[in-house]
Amino acid sequence: MSVSPAAVQRMTGSGVLIGDSDLLPRHAVFRTRDLDEARGHLCGVFAEHGVNYLPRERHLEFRHRQAKLGSIALNSLEWGAGVMVSAPLLPDFYLLQFTLTGECELWQQAHHSVLPARSVTIVNPGRAFRKAWMPGTRQLLLRIDRCLVERELRAWTGGNEGGSIEFDVPPVEDWATIGTLALFVRMVCEDLKNEASDLSHPLVADRVASGLVALLLTSMPHNKQRAIEAVNQPTAPFFVRRVEEFIQEHARDPITLADLTGIAGVSTRALQTSFRRFRNTTPMAHLRAIRLELARTELMSARRQRLSVAAVASAHGFGHLGRFARDYQLRFGELPSQTIYRDSVGCSR
Image (cartoon, rainbow, N blue to C red):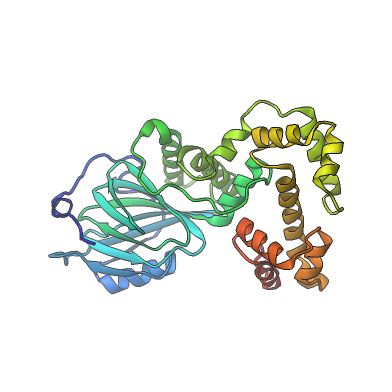
């Protein structure tokens, strides 16, 4: 892995998209010319990582400011000199990156991307990456909690989507696609400059964070786009809604596909086809998703009620404990036992 010579020489000073050099001016700035001190500071902000100078680079002018909005943290960051950052993974957050000036190069697995000024990209949780900052580069980095992104997706799709959300690796440079997202972020940055800003209020911060994630899910390419698009399709037939209502009311009861077909009053094939078309799932998968959500709610208080994972699984129609644990982890990104543990230390999602 190497940085292209042309990229090392290039110092793009134009093309500022979100703000100027005084981005987040009311927030404390951390400055240093010491590489180890800068690395230690950012390890506390993001995650453990390594930093080394690029060839012939030694003149560090590190600057960092941070503003927090609920589950989102905005970071204005520049190194001054050219450096290579090596991160083993991001634990539980996405890193949305706006390149304001200069240029970066990013390596994730087999992918290599150049991030010029006015480009946007995102790093997914659990993915190791390396990133070369060219001299004079400045970025706005948004740290977005994974649980917030998953919460917004569930709200949009009615809880029918399992599995983690993976955004595409290549950067986005088509402003017609992400223009509203960029304008929203710029609006937030501009308001944070105002001493009278109400964005620090917890209720406002949560709404702003939710709005930003909603724009992220509709602007940036990812693996759950079809599920979101399905929400905007024409209204589902009455028998689909009838089955959904039945499942919501009887999710803890033994239910078979034949039962749901009888409730719908149509053939099994018609029911399956309609669920796929209008809900991007199947009737039984929808039932399983609702049961998982109910089980999760109960697991969050299982320690106080002295309930075991097996008891909660059985009470919600999961007869096979191993399959329940697998489906639960796939949907929520953690094992049932981890949910109970987080509740016991007061850290439930």
